[in-house]
Image (cartoon, rainbow, N blue to C red; front, side, top):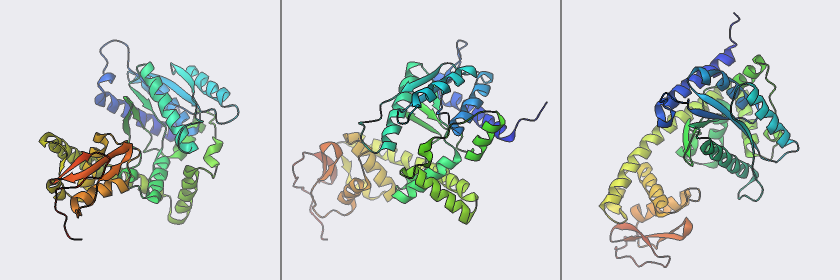
Length: 351
């Protein structure tokens, strides 16, 4: 019997490992002797997601799973509907059931075209997963995608959360999203498609210089050319290391915030002042979200202003947060106040 091509073997191994891990992580993945649990593969028809879908079609039924496919038609290019239908038909042909082509409306959403398309896509993926009671949606992001994400985060000055890159597991709108290929290179997914006789679609947006992701891809190629191919793996490994550290700091901050909320209204400034800045800022960010400020609108500037009420108190007025929320310092505590300026009873310190 002919040996399995290395790229195909690597992707199947990654899929099998993550499906096994998903069974341990998600209660809905446990089989009770009835119908096997369902996972959906998000497949655009590009080489990464096509290689993933092909591997899932092979591995899932041999590992006690049902597997389906969803392809999202963004309607941004001529022939997109026909292409999405072709991907769905291919999914049915390889045993992915259901295989669905789902159209979305991108125009009119806030943000740039990349952000609008991403928002529409994830809404469609999550909604379809809930509709079909799928345990998870599998995404085809590779190690190269992770390296590009880290590079973009560094350029934006995003901090640890951005540098941590894309998580392997993420819950969004009640649906678990899994990225099984973050240790697999883009070169491997292309090799797997070639070895399996799959014709992948090349999205012209991937070469459009108007998109930030395309610019990051070009910059990464330049870095690889100048510094060597290890750049991609090193950036991806940086994401893993930072993600582990961030998770520990997030856990510490969550415990602090829970204790503060149990103790009474607002946050105790004296207690916050004793914390390392990395933990204190996480507490303040989470508390602002607890008050109702959308996380997507909270910036470093908002958190820095809240931190100044704790560590640089000199009688300044309240901090204005997104969603019309204001926070001031009263009797040594940070509390939500009215939108009107608040006269604090704390004595200001000299500047």
